[in-house]
Length: 176
Image (tube, rainbow, N blue to C red; front, top):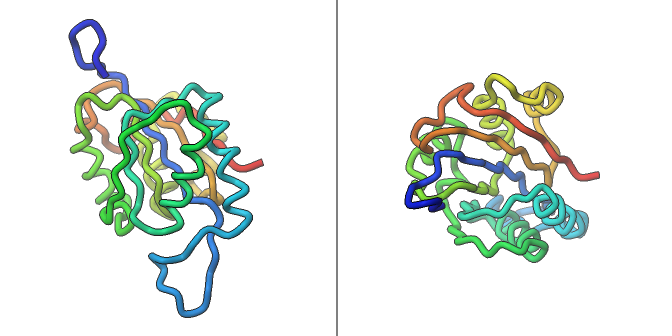
């Protein structure tokens, strides 16, 4: 994001776990759709993001059906119209590989949303959380998060400088 002729160094990372999904017998994991409960969770996620003033510049969404459906339903509640990339790497990513992927986020992106899966979403939030993090949020992400939960991490500096304990876990929002 450009401000007065420079690229901002303040970054916000939102890690969103997909909403509740179905578990049909014999269906490949990648193809699992959202359950009715998951479809009902998404508008609340979008409203909470909007209320928190989160206007993503870019969304990296796992290529799995349930994450794509989650993002499309969340997006309907947002005023922002971010660029969206559906990425196989997010579907397959563990914490370390997702952290490496974040290092390549474009410099002009101030707010990045990653729509992905457990345990990667909570493991990454826990790993990045450093000084000044919300203690209750950190305690929760350390044991995993429910579907349709999102964490907000704040970082000053380029995406490539994200490292363990280099961000502040500002909040965790779970479906209520």
